[in-house]
Amino acid sequence: MLGVAAESYSWPLALAACKGSRNRRFSVSITASVRGNPRQTCGAYGFLKRVFETRRCHHPLFLMNVKTAVTAAAVVVSAAMAGLMPALVAAQTEAAGSRADLYRHNLLTGKDVPCRTNASCAALGVAALEAGRVKEAQTLVAMEAALAEATAMQAEEGNSPKATSSARARVAMALVHQGDVQVRLGALPDARAYYRTAVSRGNDYPNDALLGRAVAAARQRLEAIAGKAVVNGVPPNGARFASYMFFGAWNSIEVKPVKGRRDVYRIDGDFVYPTVSADGQPSANMGSLSAYVRFYEGVARVPMSDDGGDAPLDATAKITNLAPYDKRRDKCLIEFKLSAPETLDVETHGSPTECGFGFNVTADGRYYLMTGS
Image (cartoon, rainbow, N blue to C red):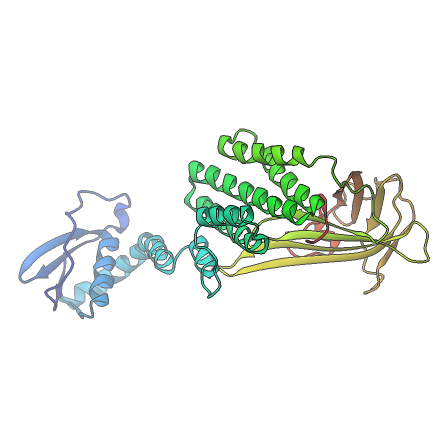
């Protein structure tokens, strides 16, 4: 048995001696001597754990019986790396903070942070709106939404179903409060966009009771403004449609009539896939398109191509046959459908990777008309 002695008196307390090992082939027992008292631990993990803890205290480690040590060293280190690395990585991650914790920390770093928790932002935002301080309320509920997304990320990392359900409800309620601000501003299409986005969250998780309460609040508010100032089709000055992603990011599509070209519209789309880096900083993969289109019975179709360079694609011709695109990995066609008032549905035919967007970026989804208040 290899003898190990420490010069320091602060050698960490030993674990009880192991009676067996899951990997007997690489199990090595070490005896440490502190103040002449033998303490025993088991296996290469225990050995390197003591080495790192001792060095962290700035106490050198000395090996006795060097010939034996050289023979055993390869076995000890080989076994240690397999057993110890997961623990070391976990310790480093914990020390540095999780991605969600760092993201939340970055959100709260700054001089102009109006509130510091999702609940306080919600309460302050509602109070400000009731008092008629609309701009202040707008700032507060935006922060409420950002912190709700951070809470959702933390719940996902913690793998807690209860926390995840609560976080979903918080995100949906933040959307409801943002809709309330738009009602006060008189932007009813925008309010409907927020409420309908909150309702759609319930469709994704129909059995989530906590989320269901927020969805019920969104439905109630949506019914209160149903039929008021509804925009049908595309207004003469154009329209912007938006689809909520996460982390406060929206996909956006502008549809504007082209002067001098009857029934021709220009579509400009900006699409994102938001992410959070390892240091908690928000970032995004992006994609965009620009095309001239005609809507045939409310549907416009754009075959994506690199042939046009930077100029908008000309997709004004009617495309009735989707067979050349469906289930094809080498082609991309994006369909825009005015499916209902203030609603634009977007679907990719073929392969999204052939659309020329960034990684994970897609134009697909349901978009709601927003005036940008």
